[in-house]
Image 1 (cartoon, rainbow, N blue to C red):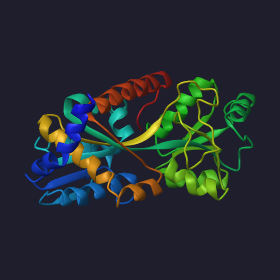
Image 2: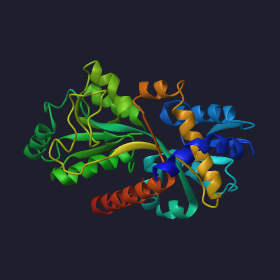
Image 3: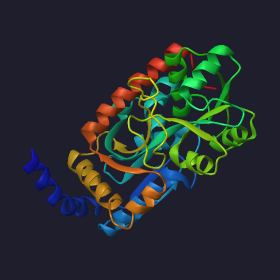
Image 4: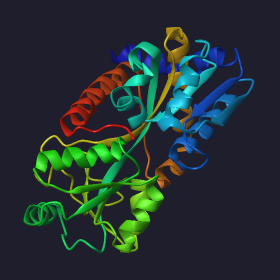
Length: 317
């Protein structure tokens, strides 16, 4: 196994160069310019050109909870020239939440790689006195329905994360959906809501300057950026693991050698000395998870969120 991995690693640059020169590459992202998805896509586009691609561009196709971008790529030719770089929730939540889409990720796409991950953080604003998760649970049980939490929108991963916590803790807290993280964070800091879950890059500035408190990290391991903040598992919620990640997929019928070449090329680009520090500065951990492991992640998380959606009665707006 180790020998095969070593041989594959040695062959990867040549394979990537051979496959990436065939056609101009377009990387579709479902968000506006700026932010981690766009950053990763632009790094890949520049890096792919350095590996011999004739051209590589990023197209920002926003709207429809990511589904405009999803539909564009699933209908594209399966030649490796059109890729979709997308956050976790759009792949693992949308098929259940938005049933009219007729979307089946395994049927419609070939996973290439989970490129990078970042922890999520449960944030408390100035309106909440609790200093940790145990204090939050106690406060919520003492005053059912009084504590409110914000999210970037109904059915997003950060909404479902809090609903999962709510169910496991057996507490009644109220959801206040916003149109994006920025207005939700503003209301948290102004004391209009008590809680907000966000990914680490959003949380870091307001935690470091003392405007909000990080109650817990939602991944199994603590973050080096917030080493004093316990995980949800340490706070008593065994198995709690909700990570924000960013994956690269292509149309389902893309030949396996092309998928393998893109996987190898993506890792080579992101781990390059000029890119890795920039990603770390954004709180992003380079993962480069291969297709088989990516597929298992998709199945596991799609099952989890489908259960949360059904049990909590969550419907799309």
